[in-house]
Image 1 (cartoon, rainbow, N blue to C red):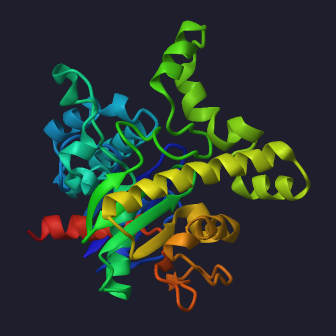
Image 2 (image 1 turned 90 degrees about the vertical axis):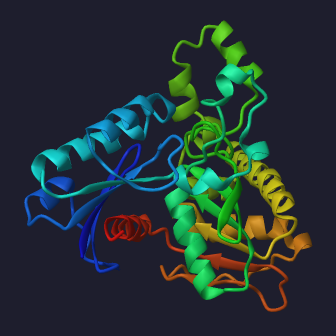
Image 3 (image 1 turned 90 degrees about the horizontal axis):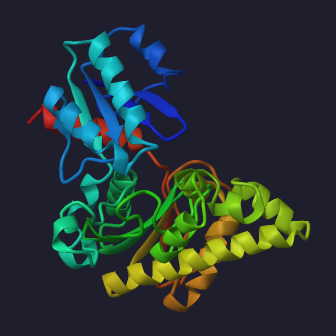
Length: 340
C-alpha cells in the first residue's frame, strides 16, 4: 500500500511517500507528488481535530468541521486545509485521511483538561494538546525498544515545543493547552503567559498582539534569534542576553517536566525528539543535569540520526533520542483506518 503523507506546518510543507510502512525517497514538493502516479491513499497531518479521537476519511462535512476549528490553530490549520483541497481536486478517487495532533491527547483526564471557566465556555475552551502524532510515534518506538517502560515523558523540542506525560501509552498531561501557544518557551512563541498580562497588553495598545505572541516572542523575543544554535554560540561569546534566553528556556522546561513527573508519580524514561531534541546535545545535557536528582544521567555521543538510547550506566531513568517520523505515523494511522 502506497500512502502519500502531507505534513503542513506553520511555515513548511513536508511531503513523503510510505510504501507498506516503509519510507520511500522524500518527495520534493506537493506539486511534484501530484505530477506522478496517484497513491492508494493520502494521509494529512491536521493539527486540530476538536474532540475527534481517531483519524477520519475526509468528505465535505469533515472539511467544514475542520474549517470551523481554524481559529483555534490559525498558523497550522489553514495550510493543512489548503493541501487537502488541492489533493482532493487533483485525485478525486483517492481517499484522503485526516490524522489529528489533538487525538493522542484525548485520553487526558478531565481534571487536567479543564480550565476554571464558566460552564458556557468549558466545552470549547479546554486543553486539547498538540504534537500528538510525534508523541504517538516516539511512545511507540520506546515501547518497542524498552517494553517495561510505563511512565514516559516525550520532549518534542523544535520550533514548537511541548512535553507530554505518557502512562502505558496514553497521554495524561501535556504542556500545550487550548492552542499551540501554551507551555514551553519556543522559537518565536511565548509559551505560558499570565492571562492578566495579555489583558494588560491589550489595554496598552498592542494592536498586533497575536503576531507578538506567535511570531515575535520566545527565544526571538528574549535575545533576537529563534535559532538555538545561535543562542549557544552567542552565549559562548559572552552575550548575556543569549545566556539569559537559554536560562529562561531551561527554567520553563524544568518546571513543566517536574509537573509531568508528578502526574506520572515517577519516571521510567525520557525521550527527546524534534529538531532541538534530536540534535542539540547541550540542551539535552542541561535537562539531564536538572533532573540528575531523579536519576536521569546520559552519555551523549554524535547525532547520527538513528533512534538510540543514551542512558548512562547505573542511571535510574532511561533516556532515548527518537527521530520525529510523523510521516510513518500518518501512514500507519491512515492504513489502519482504510483496512478497517
